[in-house]
Length: 172
Image (cartoon, rainbow, N blue to C red; front, side, top):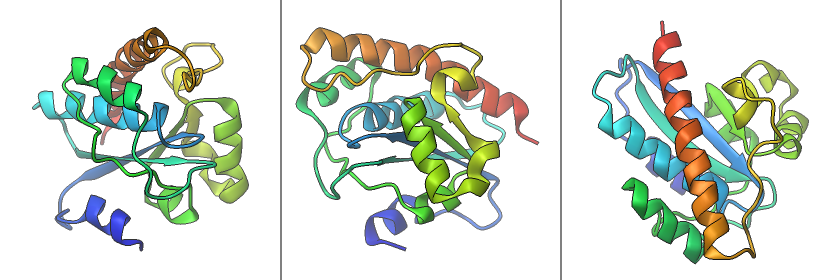
């Protein structure tokens, strides 16, 4: 297990009921770190969780150790999230194996997960389809103006509230 991944899962008690969500995008510099940051805040604000929920993120084409996009860092602050210290991580079989649920930003990311680990099919979804929306997922704001990042963060926040509720309601 890599140092960065060990650090993220460190401190988990063996008897704690834990549920791990992996967010996947391309470079792990915009959408998936935004999703992770916003989701972590949603989880922290909800004291009714039936499980300890941990989130991870990765990118299908990510270079390890890169900081998030500046606009991504800026827009998540509105939702109480701070991703300034996030370091990008490539998608690996190890990360996939740790996840109870894998939420891809687009169909191509879902396909990349399944190329790595075909057995992950039952727990891998495009984020919008996981909550029942029939859409293409979350479009990459990279290279777009700040307003596109704000739109992306708003969409993620709305989706992630529903994701949290679905996880919490379905936890056994």
